[in-house]
Length: 219
Image 1 (cartoon, helix red, strand yellow):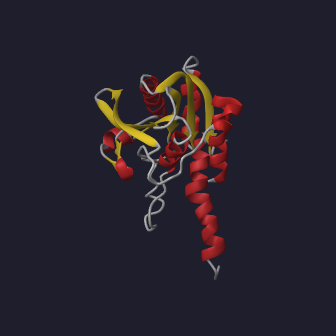
Image 2 (cartoon, one colour):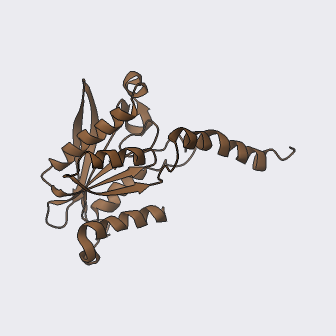
Image 3 (spheres, rainbow, N blue to C red):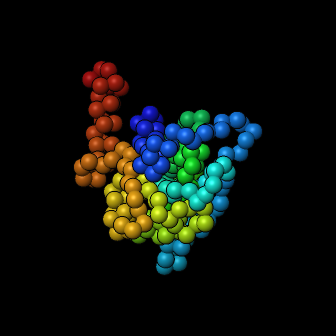
């Protein structure tokens, strides 16, 4: 989590410069620091998805905007990793945490469910989700970007795109195709090799190595 926080902290300096150090974070539990607005994004061809904008209650807007692009899998807008932590107390929600962190520090953040997906890693439409291509996900990100810049709380001249894992493949394309809108790109857990190779290592090679070294004690 520390590298992620460092990445996010860097956005403040990219957008605000040294003045970022002047922000005051109010941590009192009784003081509401973030507002939420639920949105629906029209992805085209009859497909819609739910989204949420978070923005500060403190400070004068419009605020710099951030668009979050999820990692691999049927991710909801929070990137609820319930499929990884089925037996854990509470599944991590990476994008929700990032949105909270940034909105408490002066950013308006938009995150959205992947096409065909609902809350808690639930597939609502297996046909829409199962047939989604990389280009579909890129186009979805562009539509979400257009929704972000149209929000009255957002400064359309100060927009950043954050991609996580598989999202690092799409965030640069979204930014390159929208050079007048996107000023900064942040990539977290960046894919540095072919996505199929990374997926094989994650799902096959590493579990097999773990099983051999740790579980197969009798060889």
